[in-house]
Image (cartoon, rainbow, N blue to C red; front, side):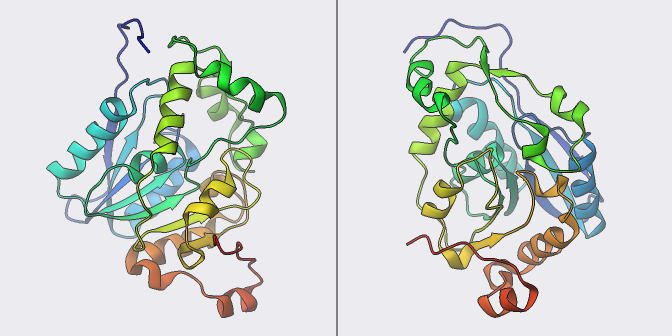
Length: 260
């Protein structure tokens, strides 16, 4: 499908946070998130305090070529700096899954499937066939769905609409996800209404899955301190730090069902 060229080419932006001598951590942000958002800044500051040099990747919100505009620049950045540990959230989790690098991933609510309500699901096949990069499809993301600590101003900071071309390239990337790497760990809220939780469960072995209480953004949810402790442990020790069934029984955390 041919798209008309645009002057405003999507651009990946990277900012660095923390001491240059610390361990490098690539953090690929979600759609519409910025390092200056209070909840994102909270997470970056905590990671830097714990000894990570955080390379925060801000993604374009209206790309139409997933490989060239999202994956390729992030991959090139990671290769240039020999980064082998990646944290990602939402759309960033979709990008990270496609990097095809010898890295260990920790995913936060990755956007591996579309979540629809009612009419949206019926209209989606029509939208993705439209050859336009003009954003007119409502994003449908509410503050309540993101987390209790999310600022309303930060929600309005993101575009209200997305384009059919963006939806199409994201959907194609979701349909072409590579096999799951058993070294990776996924954090997910079972009450997430932004991404398709079932798509996460279908792809992720139960032994690599950690459930948390809160909205789509664990770092903007009231239980973020506890979630951060688990994320930090997984960053440091990998899959072996995933809470097991006995841990869950003691602390009352409900685990997702096996992916099967």
